[in-house]
Image (cartoon, rainbow, N blue to C red; front, side, top):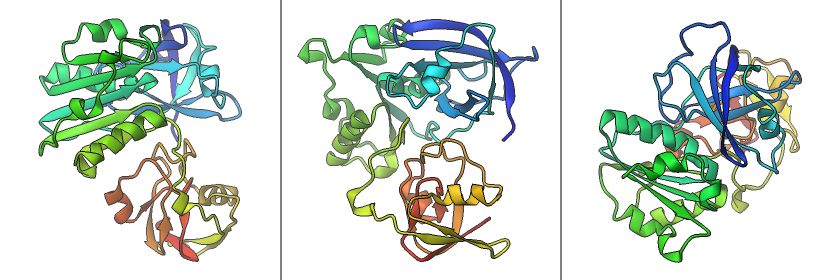
Length: 316
């Protein structure tokens, strides 16, 4: 991966536990590579190679990148490291990638839970600039926990819902969604329980899977029907070399340990950096980034997914 040198231009508290970081090129150049709403970047957080992904919430085209990061008490180290940064500090970041773009739809229904507002805020800002038709529902524990609450309170297309508020203002998913529309798209981002609830209600009232777009910040709970973790073999189509993948290791782990040039980032099946194509064999998909159509086309996330067949041949 090619890293870009960045400097923290400003750090602003959005809530007691959420900080907003504005980043600029460290070399003083005019701007970072362009991005689109829904994109994220990797951030290299220490000398040991700790990498985490953060959505870009600033308006595309500004040349700077804006991140909003929750100081999560259950963090695996990323958010704690981010919250040590101050204005003037330098860090290394990747170019943006987007697995959660705005769809080609006439109407966009955005559902954000907690820190899941970050990519959806970028979408709302883009749709405002383009004159797009959308509605944003933002759920948080309280107004004090809601990043960008003041900005969104002024937006007539945004509705805020707080767990500690009057019951009449709590989110009614079915009412917010309405009946399925042929040219509408639904976007959901936030904690796993929030996402699962919105998606389940959407599917129950008939919204087709192709209309539902998601981004998860942590891996979802494995499907109980897909928890077999037996060993298997991966074969590289380019060389014919085979590697044994034991039940306690991922295919990506094994490839990297054997010096294979395999791109990777989150290692949780949520960013899409490591995705490759399966040429032979039957995958057992366990990622949270590929659509069902992409999985059916043979795409495979070796960081989390496994095999139902003895051998998987990869296009590598």
